[in-house]
Every structure is written in C-alpha cells, then in structure tokens.
Length: 528
Image 1 (tube, one colour):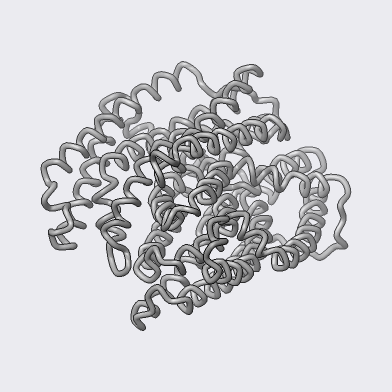
Image 2 (spheres, helix red, strand yellow):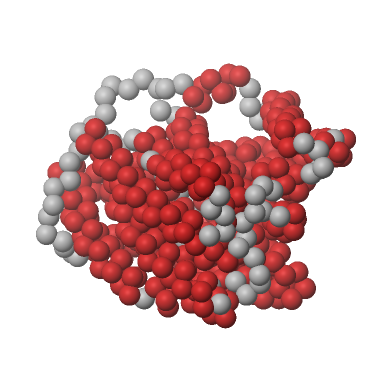
C-alpha cells in the first residue's frame, strides 16, 4: 500500500474520531459552559488528554518502532515476539505503579497544572476527584498504545485509528442524557462524564486487543524485565511522548499559565478542539505512518528514500493545514458562534474563544513541520537532539506568554504555543541540515511555493464570501441559516483549493490514481 493510501486511511479514521470528538465537545460546552465545574473537568483532564492525544498520533511509536524494526531486521520473528511480550508485561507492571502513585499525588498534580485554582477550594476539590478517576483511564490507554504500536508496525493502521471512537460515542450518549435531564453546570454532570471516560478507556483496550488476536498475534505474560531493549524502551517512553507530543505539552503549559484568568482554561480548551480537527488528520497520519517508513528505509541504507518520504509528508501536511490555518483566522467568529453558542455557552464565551482560535491557527504549519522532521532522528534512535528542540519550544512558549499576558490576556498563551512550534521545527531542521537528512529537495521547494499560493487564494475566497454573507452568518440569523451558510463557505473554499492545486500542477488525476493504487504483493509475514 502506498504512503498516500496509508496517510489517507489513518487520516480519515482519525478525522472521523476528531469529528465525533468535536460533537462531544459541543455537547460538553452546552452542558458545562465555562463554569467552575467546566474548569475543574478540563483541568483534571489536561494530563489524561495529553496522553490520549499524543498516543493517538503515534507518540508511542517514537520509542517502540525503531527497536521493533531493528529486531525484525536482525533477529527475525522469534526475536520480535520475545521483545513485545517482555515489553507488554513490564509496561503493565509499570503502569500499575504509576497509576497508584498518581492517585496519591493528585492534589499536587492539580496544583501544578492549574495553580490558579488554589483560591477556589471547591473547584480544586472537584478537579482532584475528577483527576483521580481520569488517571485510571490513562493506565488503560498507555497499555492500549503498546498494542497499537505492534499493529502499526505490521501495517494494521485502521483499527488503531478507529479505536478512540469508543470514548466519543460513549460520551455523546451520556451527554445527550444529561442535556435531556437539564443537568447544566452541575457537579453531578461532571462526575458522570468522568466515569464514562473511565469505562471508555477499558473499551479501547479491549478493541485493540481484539485487533491483535485478529492479526494472528498473541501476547503471553512473562516476568517483567528491565534488561536489554525493554529497558531501552521504558527509558524512551517519556522522552518519546515529549517528542511526538511537544505541541500538546505546550498546550498544557498554556492552560497552566492561563488558569488564573477567569474562564481562560475553558476558552483555550474549546478553541483547541477546533484547532485539532485539521491538525489531527495530518499529525496522526504523519506520526503513525512516516516513522515506520523512514525506519525501514534507514535500516536498508536507503537514505534517499527516507528523505523523499519526509519531503512528500511535508507536502501532504502543508497541502491540508496551510489553507485550514488561514481560513480559521478568517472564519473564527462564525465557526465558534455556529458550533458552540448554545445552552450555557454565552456570546462573551464565543468572542473570547474565537480570539484564542485565531492565535492557535498560526501554529498549524509549525506543528506539521515538527511531525515530519522528527522521524529521521527517531529512526536512528537519536533522542537527545529532538529533546533539546522540544525544550527550546517550551522555554519560548513560557517567555512569549509571560511577556504578553498583561497586554493580551487570554490570547497570550496561544501565541506562545505558535511561537514554540516554529522554534521546535527550526531547531530540528537545523540539525537535519547539518547531517544532510533535511527532507527538502527541488520538488519540495517548488510544490510548497505552489501550495502556499493556493492556500492564500483559498483564504481570500473565504474572506470574500464571509463579507458577502455577513448577515447570514451573524447570530441574529436563524441557526439553520447560519450553519448552512458556513458549510457552503467551507465547501467553496475546499473546491477553490482543489482547483488551484490542479491548475498549479501540484496534482492531477493520474497522480491521484497512482498514489492510491495498491501495489501487487507476493505475501506478507507478521513482521513485514
């Protein structure tokens, strides 16, 4: 199966998960609004959501896949089986200890991620309770991530990308009941949602476990061992999470620094959910598919193939996120108003969330660059340089946010996130340039320039249509009219972007058919 087909398969499954997650968050906004319960629920899930998002985008792959590929190439199937069984047993033992420790230290964790809650004891207590339940969910999804990495390594991408749907479907059902009961801005509603998340984590673990059995693989329990490659894997899990999820870590930092501003944590969360729609499609596809491809190429000493794969990944990502970023800047107000302004979500909430969304949109290209520039480092099992890049981004995030928070308030933190993404990408690119692994060639430069031109044209059309139909997009108009108008503007933008890509020679029908044609295969072993 071609890279384009893999990217689209994973991206489409992830987009479906993001869309249902988006419906879920619209319903959360209607149930909790930007109340104290909403702040407590969102703060409690800052770290669990961080793990969930970075794991869904292939973060565990950063630690697992290079070791798996090396053992498959040098030791064969028996070596791989011994490694994954030892890794599974050791990880389960580690997770049990980590979850128990987190339960005991939850007040400290909440104080760290939301220091502004200290002045509101009731909100702080709710966040601690919600967080204790949420961290059991974290244990389930970390184990799920190991199983998912095994499935990714053997080319079983779709089920892994679809598994997170369990969380969204279950929460949507519970939220519908809460809305029907009229439980808005109530502590009981938040508690019901947290318990649902816990059950969904167990369901996700069962789904990927079933996928592993369906692939003809079984994990037998072994005595936990911290020797050899298992020790290397365990030592790289946290750095791997930091590397693959640098953008999400910066969102946690942004929420932490916004926690003293009333409702700012909630506004950032709701804007981030919109921001994740285009980013999730691209980041999950690149993070899941590109690393195994680059690892195999480097193991076979095919350095040109590795660079070409990275270059095409950047083009794929920019083709989608550049027009999305510019369009989010142009259409932030009508998008937020149409989607979120219901129930407990007020006009002031919509205005503030749109301001945050415009700032976050600037980070999209930087995040895609980080995703595409990481695999050459990870495939060579080089963790140090990418960690320096990620930490540089965090430092810039903190400096920019603290410098702007007095003048810009809740908009300062998302601007810090955008700055951090580009600094991270810049440091990664500088390192690859020095080693000759930078995935930019003449084709990339030409195509990226054309993609930028097409994206500007797309945003220009969106701006023109928004101006022409301003009355139909404004809140006094009926919701159905506003939603239909916004959908029409988005569809027109997509059509213009596609037309520009064809006109500028970025793609054509023959290339699309070739990219998605399944190549003939003579067979595949489980470790292929």
